[in-house]
Amino acid sequence: MTFSIAGTDGNGRLGIAVSSSSPAVAARCIHLHDRIGAVSSQNITDPRLGDVLLSYLEEGMSAPAALDQLLSREETRDFRQLVVLDSRAESAVFSGSHTLGTHSEGTGNDCVSAGNMLANEGVPQAACDAFEASKGKELEVRLMSGLRAGLIAGGEEGPVRSAGLSVVSGHGWRDTDLRVDWHEDPITELERILEIWLPQREDYVIRGLDPASSVGYGVPGDQR
Image 1: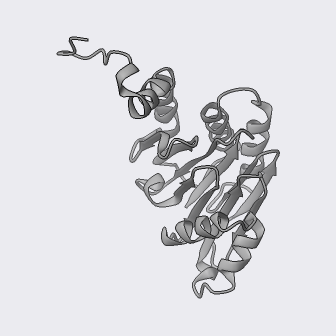
Image 2: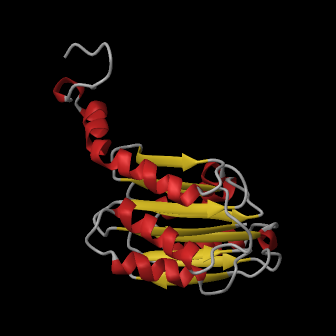
């Protein structure tokens, strides 16, 4: 009950945007590792598979090789849909025989998308086409464009209720990690939160890496 897009800017940043009719989709589906890769474990989700795939990528496997390795040993594979993007922008998608409803995948330069319970098979490719068309913009904006385009192309068969967007940039944590866990229009709400977040993102990175040089916090009680 999910569609997602994974992408990279080609300079080490990796991220995923995802939406679903289920609550709190980003908490289960998004898996990222600095300069290693991005994985979405979706459909009848087992979040553990995302970490396993990232561990294979960290060992130096490509996205297709990592996925093949997992599928060769995973007994529940027929129930899973897995999306893998490595740091070289190689991608792989698997949709098991018990993937729900209409399902498909899309590809593009530096991105890959897949979904299940879709309104039509064109949704993932629409997401990738929008990602490619927004080249030159912040990765978060490009992923958000892909998610919006997927929704416009039909999205899921029913209404989506949760969405999330996360990006890693080599700092040791997700420098963008935004979620809308239940909302009548979660993608629009996620866009609104992203507009608030992006102008402040680097300030929070500096606070983590070099707190002595960070800017004032701009909150009541801050005397800096």
